[in-house]
Length: 359
Image 1 (cartoon, rainbow, N blue to C red):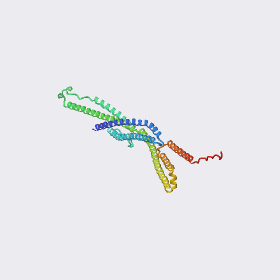
Image 2 (image 1 turned 180 degrees about the horizontal axis):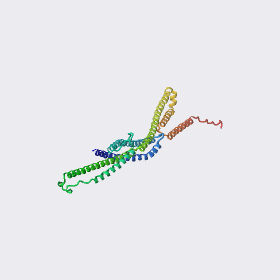
Image 3 (image 1 turned 90 degrees about the vertical axis):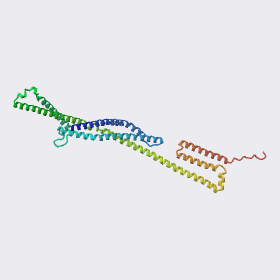
Image 4 (image 1 turned 90 degrees about the horizontal axis):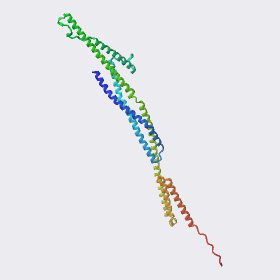
């Protein structure tokens, strides 16, 4: 009964083990792909690291950040699969160790040394091999003993029992019983030796599975180490990108704040200057007449408003440096040209000498 239960458990563990080995192979393939793609992604992301200067640069930073997040998600998923496999196979390892110990006790194989300490796997395997050889020798001996025992003679091969004396009949009966007993003992020993060989065979199979579990499936040290290294590396790149994006947003926020206050200050300046202009004109009749007698007053207000508007266009980055230079240059040329015309119109014409009298 115990042998049947152990066999069923071994079959279940073997199926679980086969599935785990397949999953482990998939994980190793995925980790190899991650390690292959990591340098290219790192180089591509490193190229984009720098202080963003435009919205296009900001978009490239956002794209690189999303790429790193996807790659980190893949890395962490494979690391989680490795830990899941280890957690799943740990009970199998424990179950295999318990089954090996139970089978060893049943087969009469020692599992501890003289100091009552568990044997190493190498020492335990040596004892299993030794027991295997001893049991095979016992099996051969039991088979030879069984063949040596004479089969029970039938009554037809015997003389007529009725013609035998009581002593001969008794002796014949004892011989027959002795032969039967010896055959039963030989067959029982043969079955016992065969059962022991089966248990030793199952011990060997369990040892092989345990070796695979310990040295093959669970040995994800290099894969897990590379995943953790990539995780740290790309986390650092992600932090650098976040810093650059934060700086970009901070600079943009400061620029917006500067544009807001500049617009506010220049707007107040326009109101103050134009208000002062009309206030002075309202208070003094002579000033009002001199200002509105020609176009000088309107020209002043218009030019002042244009200059403020051009400055605001530059502050708000609506116009670039070339456009601002062209506008200011044209405006300066207009002002200087108007000033020259005004001076020419106000310069008195030279007096013409009158001809002498009597000419």
